[in-house]
Length: 554
View 1 (spheres, rainbow, N blue to C red):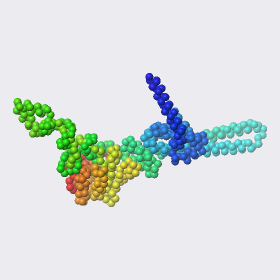
View 2 (tube, rainbow, N blue to C red):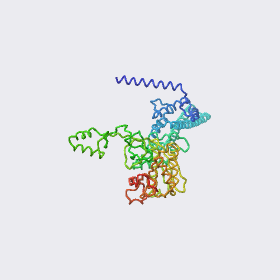
View 3 (cartoon, helix red, strand yellow):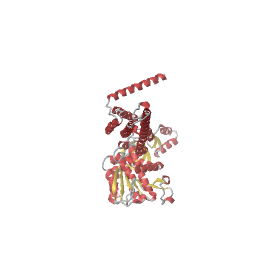
View 4 (tube, rainbow, N blue to C red):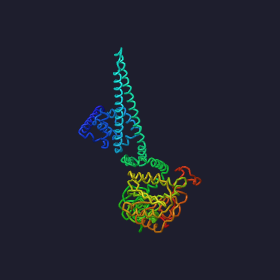
């Protein structure tokens, strides 16, 4: 049975390969060759006549199919182009770089690789053709010189010796030409490896940061001017920030809370509890007014929902008054064991300090307001490092959860920077440039708060956004009109303002602006003024106790 199954599998594979060969024979032979490489195809044929352009096109198509499948083109799979030495050297280089796994996920890279391979073949072929021509001319000149000299005596022996010497010289020239070609091939492949190593490192970093598929914009824009993979300093900074986030998971948990909105249906998540109120932003709260489902057991004083065991006390209380008294006491205390028939309703709510499991809709957008003043570079650069780490984490979660993310970078004396954070080629370039940016200037909240309020009211999609304000606490009091505009936006849109203060002092201004305020400070105050390397394990994020459940008036 096993043998018959193997034979059937082999037969199916043969038929599949036969169908592919038939389709390939009828297809356009240039279909697998990038149009930009057609001139190189012609030059390769002229410099290496042993391979016609159809053979070269078929070889390129074979490499394309292999790379799309995530492996190199091997000899057992029919590989016959280019020459064996170059083919093995090329395949080994691709495997050492780890490119086949990227070409499988990002076929956009294949055209650039095949174009480079064709360039190497053309350079080698033209160099080999030139060397062989010079060797032939040298041999012809030597032969002419020998035959033009008159010989006396042993003429036949001298002629034979001259012919042998010419043959040996030709073999030596041929060997020297082969060695030069091999050396040139190694040099060209080494140049290719050095050119692609930064791109592979960027692809690796992008996938580690954003998951599988996170490097698609890098692959699609590889050949464009100013491609994101060329910013090696930015990717190095991103790698360090990713390490900081790995060692401080509380920062990731904080970003995960941003932009979450309750809904009637959806996966249950732990979110701040909400209570129904007469005046408040729209939300979702449990209500007994619509008993649409039974979600468990609870305590209540309602006879209609009590369990039969509670009614049993009332029945037997006719003969034993103590049981009846116990039943009525539990009813007055709202302690009767009852069915929980409350359901979620969309009503005006206010947020509580407690948390509960409640249905949640898709995460809303994120508005990140980042203080880029010079004071953020103090304490060994820790505030600047953690601020950039929060920017990086906001982009990571916005990408993984298909959310929008906007960054406002503010400081006095510098125009307010507004960056749309996404994984497009332009978005990655903006992010990498920002990660290399050194903070400077003073601090002013007015412009950034007004820009955030404007963004909240710009469209329905941004109405569900939450704001994250990151600073070192040294912020001036904003104008009363700005605070009033922010308060109106909070009431109309239900937006929450989260604050992160990096330092020992939170300040009254931040406490008055934020619904939830967090302090990122050193675990030991004795090292507060050192300028050593930022160690995330020396820092902790803690939530400050709020005076009221909502932001106070500044």
